[in-house]
Image 1: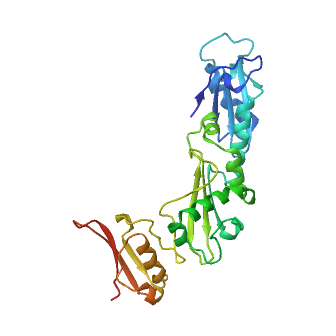
Image 2: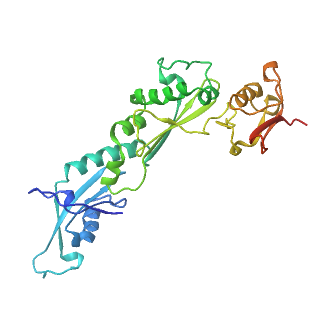
Image 3: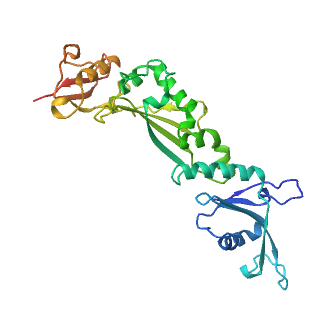
Length: 290
């Protein structure tokens, strides 16, 4: 999708004199020039390829012997390369760098061990799990901050935080939203997902993604007492997780349970169901072992 831009008040022809457009199939100078001829009626164009890191700006004229006309044949068009507008070039260099670091996408997703976040997060240690992230706002928030503070440890995070924003994408005619996702893995194998997008209002931290936390056995950890969290969870006897910790967590978010998690009870199977009543609606989790 091309974006038309206002002309620059300058004696040097720049990208703003025409449109800025992506050409994923342009891999040679000849391909760029041939594609550029399609924009003859606009007066100028900047074409780029995020994957190869190439960007070119052109203006047009007519070759000798051809009369001026609205739609001249391609062989009549003279394509002349000019300097790319510095703002466009800077935006392209930053976005292309992230695109390549993210594996040729505008969305990067990586997983990191909690130890990569360093010693500056109170409450983050070998005993911390994704349950704690869902239950402790300050821990949850601080992890998101420390991912940004430690951005230089990961190429994708550094490239996104330092260089990419929505203005740059719009400048390049890209409607895509740039996204960075970081899944933090705790010592017990449980995980929590953090996210930052080019549309985020605060780029100093990644935000925890509600509903993204998982147990060591990759079962979901409910964030709140809501009907979307109905389902079954399994204890160690069924190849699942510690139902004591699960029960404690569910009680912490206001969900009644019928087994004694403090007494070491570890049901084989737990069913959580949404119940409606005059006194209020709630999830109820019960030992459903048969």
